[in-house]
Image (cartoon, rainbow, N blue to C red):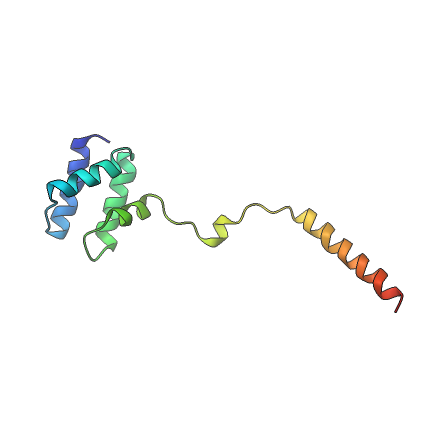
Length: 101
């Protein structure tokens, strides 16, 4: 995104929350978000305006840009065939152990 696009998005936040950004805050936010795609940044700003009661933070926008994954999304694909084989092997081992009883 370029500076003009960025400034337009910041202007929306300033208007929505009736609070201007200081020069220092603008510089900090620019350095944080300058490499973010304008469409992703715009979407995050729009979502923040709709959902944040208070002026969003850098972290609020990053959360909207890259939402945290749910626990079930972090689980890698499991090889259930291998798991079935392990369960069967355990059952056979237990059966052999119980034969002597």
